[in-house]
Length: 473
Ligand SMILES: C[S@@+](CC[C@H](N)C(=O)[O-])C[C@H]1O[C@@H](n2cnc3c(N)ncnc32)[C@H](O)[C@@H]1O
Image (cartoon, rainbow, N blue to C red; front, top):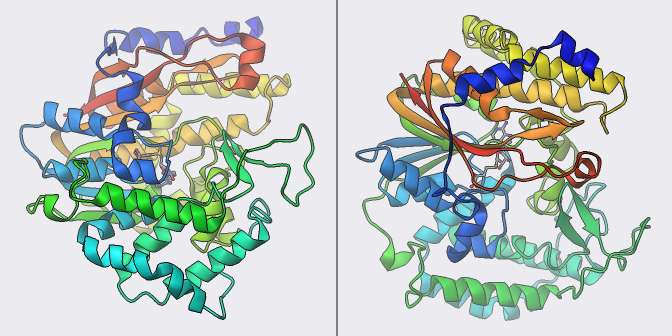
């Protein structure tokens, strides 16, 4: 490695020096405030666990502290809509872009819940079981993909199909959504799988031939019991007697703006938005950590009707954050040419190429790969494209935000082959090039180690988890 360091006298260290005054340990922004765990008191997050989300409190904190009055807020990686719903509650007009049908479905259900009459929902739940018995010819709703096949006990899959067939007969589309959502949020519970870091872990009782130490996930609920419990939870949380944070029915604020949800890739959708049309952006992109949303949420995707081809395409459209992601550059070139913005495309490429820290990271990773020091040889490609695609995203965010507007971004640094990649600094440098002032890079008080396989080799050292705050000039 010393050979490498001689060739590249740390550009990352220089970048650190450049931004060191902006780095600020933020004791008020602790991990609990930032992460999804702070949402536990909000019903939606209790009903369906989405660990990749940040907290509503974080959104509320920034929107109220850094803006005198509500305006228009955007989240280009909307997830299940934390920015959109927290912003809406404060009177903001909110817009979100989300690629995966999982997040879009949850957001749409959250909207449906706002419109629904609780008495109608209760009545529909009351008759559900007797109605289900009347369903004779149920349709098969699952086009399983390799990683979901045999995920459910046979009886459970039949019950799920029966239930979905019944849902199609429910005329009120909001009640239909809530019904489908209730079963959607118990899929893991009634399956042989458990979401476990990068992959689904399989219980020894499944029909699969499993290698390694048998895994017992404990009691696997029947569909009927799990769904009954889920409906009880939903109805109890939605009841007006429950003093929850959820603005439901009579508690809803009447002057809230509707939420705009765009389903698609932000790389494609951001260029369609008008210049200087937003006052604030609060967002968190996927981290550069190989985490594959399409694997973690495979059961949910299949439940929502995605087949193998659809899932494969979604995986490729994700911001490059897995070793499977291929380059999107030719596609982006065509896209920008087709909307007459070739100069914008060229500017992004030259901004990316002129980052010396980026160059250093790419070269060091290539060298580590050559020395066989990375545990997957597509890591350099993933990292290269992760930053390139975020460079496009940041250039677009700078274009759509008004002068003086803020962009708040939550992201983690990462480490591969022992080399720290200062995601916060590299992205902040891009942001500056596109006309943002880097106001602060808030560093969360407790960092985290890296994935377990790397900790084994390099010991646990802290890498920064940050909230960046950039202001458009
Ligand atoms: C860290 S999560 C954001 C969670 C969100 N802050 C919340 O609280 O729900 C990142 C999200 O970006 C989405 N995503 C990944 N690639 C995308 C793309 N190209 N366009 C739009 N969304 C994308 C993922 O599906 C995921 O939901």
